[in-house]
Image (cartoon, rainbow, N blue to C red; front, side):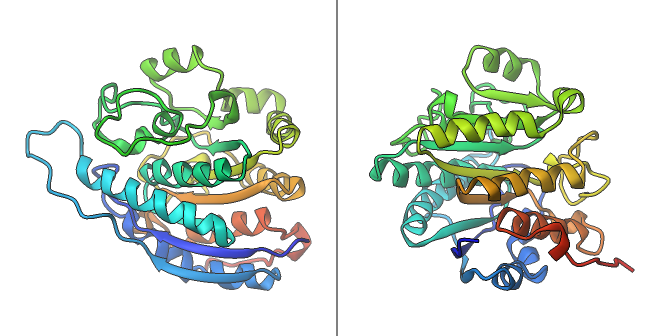
Length: 308
């Protein structure tokens, strides 16, 4: 197994939605021994602490979008931090709600461009997060990061995306909560999208393998963004956007193991963990186990845990 210099970057972003609690996510991963787990696998680990957003002014009270200026400030800070971290090792961004990926993906894409390589994104999520600030009904900006880093119009208030990720370089797996506006827009794109019905019918390995072959064929750099709600809420309750019918523990580990086998993953998001909603840390522990699978741990290496 190739040893990595894993950089833990805390991103306590809690501005992308109205339900609070994701700001506690980074420390929950630390408490669940993410760093020690990766060290046990032979990787070096540097915990860079928690980031802070760039300076920002409070929004006007009549603004339709929730915490717009704060989310813009986080995007600015995370873009810079991600680009820098990519030069030093393998960054793992500890979230924090999914609006943070607007910055992490923009930053890693800048690094890929500097190396003359294409950026790819695997989006493991119940949602597409393909809204723009104009199309979102909720006003929650954690539903917009894919649209942002893919270069869709409507983000004039945000930092300009220097290196948009091409649609054909994005793959979404685990979808099961997509509204009509997003569905209609996505159908006109080249984004690969695989909902849970397709996974039920054909399995999760086939679409992932096809995407990984595509990444490898283009010598791409692969960013993986893992949302807690990719998983079924019966096994991962610590998320404010629970959608029944998600990936099983075994399906999720298979995805992570395939990612490790491919050797293609160059950066990782762990997002939408809300410890306030967890049960004795079970979701944080599962997410740590999944990160470990992505970084080389096999079934026979995985300890049996008791939650009693």
